[in-house]
Length: 314
Image (cartoon, rainbow, N blue to C red; front, side, top):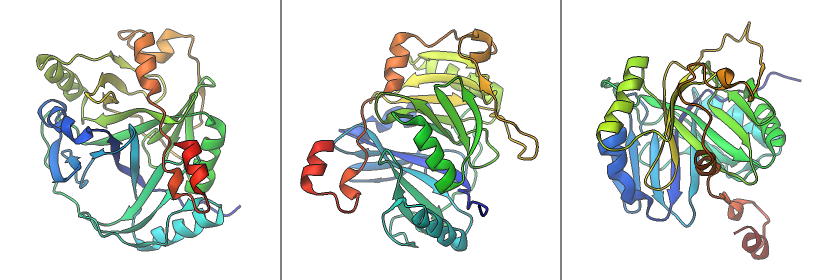
């Protein structure tokens, strides 16, 4: 098999849900993001790094993901990726073209097997980096619940060139597209939904200070702080006003492609789940909120689906 074209990196994510833009003050005043742009029914928030936005809030009919935003290095890479995903039978939502949104650049969109929309972009608006103590620099990773973990894993590997970094028993798989241990992780679930979105702060001290900032503002972690086994990253999870789980993290393991071998991490050894043994296992309430609300994705964008199909999946 010829070498896979690989997605270069994760840029950000746009969430959707009823009244979601009304939660904007939480992300500005507490989480540490800055408003990059606001339109009727939508807001985009940036971090201290160069990305145009890290996290978006869009008014929509269901709580879930509007799109996950990935980077490609140039237009030629976009064209090559488009040819690959088309050849692999992905649901492609159009040919590569210049984006007409406020970010610009060149790219296209597809749907993954759970009908989540994925956007690939080369170029577009970038900000100057503005380091600020204990504030989020980038989106580290997005974790997705899926009823078909093995099938979706195979699809991300075959269609988009992701590689497996590690497994958490038979319940979770960590997938990388860059040197970061994981940009996407999949969790075995009863239905498709978002599990959580993790934001990176640059150092361990800043990670702890970010938790302290939240605590001083009356918002404590629902799980953590601790340090995961897979990825070797510290974690602290919070629940946003709209019910989405978000995480502060730092120091995510960097993968050496020449030497790394995926391993299966046990879930029945507490020290493998949390190396510091400070967080303990997630509570039933934490597991429930990370299970999320069913996200139908975008079945209406699948070519050939009739109105009865759409109603059945609504």
